Amino acid sequence: MIPVSLPYLPDQKKYTRYVRKIYDTHRLTNDGPLVNELSVRLKEHLGVSNIVLVANGTLALQIAYQVVGLSTPGKTSEVVTSPFSFVATSSSLAWQGIRCVYTDIDPDTWCLNPSQIDDGVTNLTRGIVPVHVFGNGCDIDKIRGVARKHGLKVVYDAAHAFDVKFQGHSILLEGDASVLSFHATKLFHTIEGGAIVFREGEHAEHAKSLINFGDVTRGDRSLMGINAKMNEFQAAMGLCVLDDFHTIVERRKEIVAMYQDELQDVCLFQRRNPSCTGNYSYFPVLMETEARLIDGIKQLELAGYGARRYFHPSLDKWIENSRMVSARVSHDISSRIMCLPLFPGLAETDVKKICRICKMAQR
Ligand SMILES: *Cc1c(COP(=O)(O)O)cnc(C)c1O
Image (cartoon, rainbow, N blue to C red):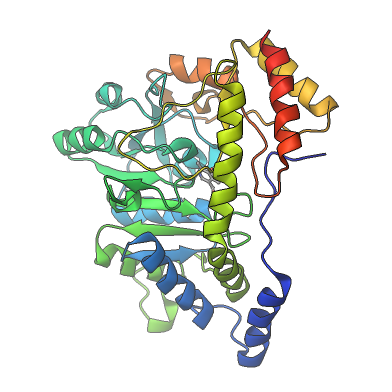
């Protein structure tokens, strides 16, 4: 079975060299040298300064919400967010006691539609959590405008947007914070892992305390934290994958070009934000109807290919105690979208076969 995504494994000898270092130093976790090395290299690679490495992307989201102040202890707060995303965007809000309020996505870019955010804003609203879905940058200028008008914080779920540039700089510099996931299936990974990029250095320092129990070691009991530290084995994997990152992206780019070439008259693609670079993290296609999508997935599976419904169902149908303001487009898109296999080791012959099956399903 050829999966939708296959975690990238770097050279085993190289990884073992890092593991040996861990054995030599007995530093396994707690802000160790490899986590620091990865942090320095990511700052350089991404062109950001206030980055905090975290155990996974979901905890990274929760920490970011807490630090920028999307939740108010003892009071209900609401956040306007996208119904079209992976469940963690919303479940992490709910876990922080924040009510998810859904306004619709744009039918072409599949990102939060800025002109509808207003409809979801009440006097309980503290922020906006837009998603750069499939690595496609949101309409950043308009979202900034809406946030300013209502005095709201913005935390971008940038789990798909590693290395994406907006108007020539890292997209992670936008908003009050941006959150990355380094899960094994993501473009860049540390087995499990994530990071938060904050606009303000003070916020990054606050987050560094929160991920380590509120920094009990300093004897400060005023700050209640959690355990969300990245460990040294995770960082070692990240350092190895980062070395190969350019090659990984180049190969993905070639595969995406093949898909686009074969399927441009067959399926609808996501409209990319022209102010942003792409990162080839996913290859989603929109089928004409849900029936064709289901047929396509069945045929692909019979031929030995995994295709996944990304993202289904629309989150407003999934998250309890949420409030749906508008999600008509999200319902439509999530009913007929799938992601096709995309990873560096995927062969051209397989891409061709996958495309043939998609064409048949659309006829
Ligand atoms: C993967 C993902 C997350 C969660 O990240 P984990 O590292 O798996 O916890 C959050 N949001 C989106 C959009 C994702 O794709």
